[in-house]
Each structure stands twice: as C-alpha cells, then as structure tokens.
Image 1 (cartoon, rainbow, N blue to C red):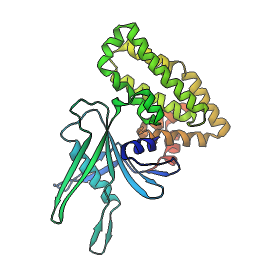
Image 2 (spheres, one colour; image 1 turned 90 degrees about the vertical axis):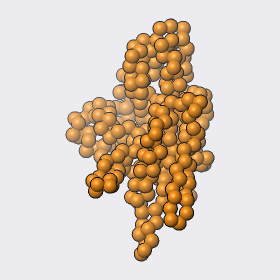
Image 3 (cartoon, rainbow, N blue to C red; image 1 turned 180 degrees about the horizontal axis):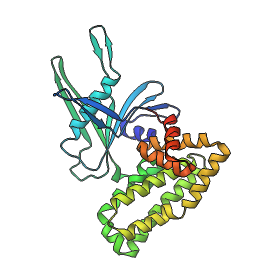
Image 4 (cartoon, rainbow, N blue to C red; image 1 turned 30 degrees about the vertical axis):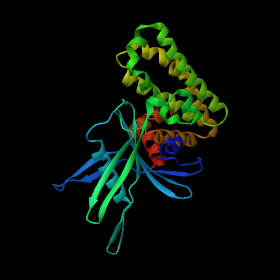
Length: 294
C-alpha cells in the first residue's frame, strides 16, 4: 500500500512489482558528548525496481520548529548506515524524504528545504509534504492511497462537537465511513487487496479514532458501528479460516507484512498475531520476528 503514496508524493510510477525492503526504524545518533541517543523514525525503506531508491517518511500532526532538524538527523544516519568508504573517499546517499501532515492550515507549507553549506559548496534538497486532509474518499480510492484511510478522520476533526451532539450530522459522517467500508469490500471482491489488508486498515482506523475522538463517545460509537463492530466476529473467523486453509504460517507472515507496511509497531503486531491465531505472547513474538524485516 505504500507504493501509491510514493507515486503521489514523488511522481514515481511504481507498478507494485517492485521489491520493498524495510530498514530498522531505530537509529542511534552520536551526540557531542560522545553518548548515543536512540531515535525512532516512522518508516524507512528502499524500493528496488529498475533502479534502487531509499525513502524516509514521517507522519506529523502539525509542523514544529524541530521537524527539519529531525529530518536532517534521520537522513544523515540513514545515509551513514549504507555509507561506503573507498580509499580516501566516503560516499553516502541521502534518502528521498517526505512528511505526511495529519493536520494543516493555510500556512502549512507544501515543501520543506534543507540547505547544507560545505567547504565544497552549498547543497539544497527539498522534502515534499503530503496533506492528508485534502484528499476526499473518492480521491483516496481512485489513487489507491489506502494507506491514508486510517487518518481520514482528521479531515472532520474541527466538527467533532457537531457530530457528537447532532444525529443528522453524525449520520452524514457514518455514510462516509459506510462508503469507505463498502469500497474496501469491493477491492477485496476484485482481488485487489486481501482480507488481512482490509482488516488491518479497519483496525488501524479504529485505533486512530479511539485516540483522536476520545472525548466524543457518541461519535466514536457511530463510526465504529460502521467500521468495526459489525465485522469483528467475521474478521476473526475469516482470518482463522485463512490460517487453517492456507497454513497458519502463511497467515502469520501475511498479517505481519501488512502490519509492518502500515507502520504498526512491533509490539502491536505481536499482540495482533497472538489474538488472531490464538497464540501465547512468546510464541507470537518468535513467529512475528521470523517475518519482521529489519
């Protein structure tokens, strides 16, 4: 699901046949006092097709003064991770970086820029920004930007009070999420996504909703009744049956890969696999780590 997002941001033309290799999200940055500080990036990976390119994406609720500094720190460390010393020459390649803004205003920039003054000259590179709120449900499905679905609720954040207190407005929001759910079902029927992908998108959507709308019980219940409540039993049975018919290992591998592609933390993925396949935590951890790409 990440390839259409990369195509949208960078104007690439990836088809889905490329190989994606996720890098470790933990990086240790060297400090001036000699100590190391651990920093976790949202997503760092490389795409291998006709050429090989490195990418680094960050989700950001809003812009802040430290954002560019973090991008430079992460980019430098990612470049050093794959750096190559050839005699007296150090060769490093910075990743193509982008920020996904969950919230934006009229003052939110479309492009961030880093400028580095070196003894050999000045280097500048841009970091494009994707503003999630600007995409309608129709555009998300037309462009196959399914990665954005869990964050689509941010587009309605300024009207949470109205949705929570007025049935008519809430029904309009529920219709929107009915469209999302039905569109996912259509993609499943057409074979363009699998059951694991659909269920993971819905699960991530519910988690984001739980966090962002925690003060709005009526709104949460209304959306969850559409996206989650009616499919929980079906979801569990479908995934378990898929594990039985296709082999439990294949099911665990598929679910692990989808969770990682969506940026789900390792610990959450271990918990999800344990619940879906009836495993204890230690067994689930061992199996997930078999397929988790570092």
